[in-house]
Length: 220
Image (cartoon, rainbow, N blue to C red; front, side, top):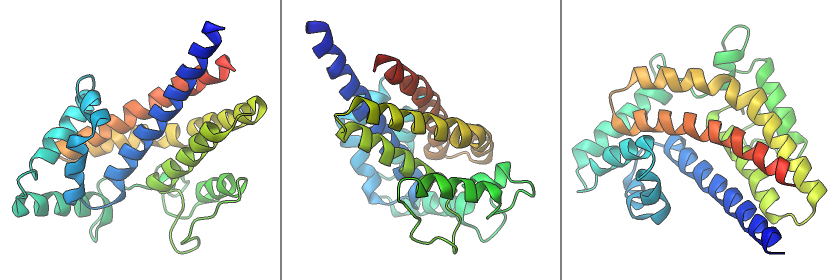
């Protein structure tokens, strides 16, 4: 009885930890830096991560550069985000899977349709479908987050197994296929600690996901 209760607690803890890490990574890549980043420094979970993760320590250093409301440093970070991910010039580190895995390395290739099909299996669609490719890093991570949340909410073992299978499939067939190249490219393309740390954290997170999903599947 004690072992079963401990197992339930660990499962819940792992799922919530996965959900938090997903949110953290998405937050950094989702938008140009703003003063909301400072809230990360006060988050107990983030502070704990900084004690064990070099990636988080780099992110912390990058965020601290704007802690004193230094408009100039904030502007530099915003310009770097735009240079890396927005343009208008050629992007050093594009955020779309199709750029890395598509036959022509262009947007809206076959891989975009494959990702779209994954979303539709759960009744989801990208709000800007047809205008922007839905194989963007943040959208793919958001879908994984959605599946994690569904797993947290479910009390049915078979439903959890199916959700975990789909998470593992999406991770191995998509995110783990292209994100290592993206992370390597990003690390080489920037000297800003925030984005060097973000590249490391994304790589660490996805590898950890692969391990944890497998462990959770075996525990059920």
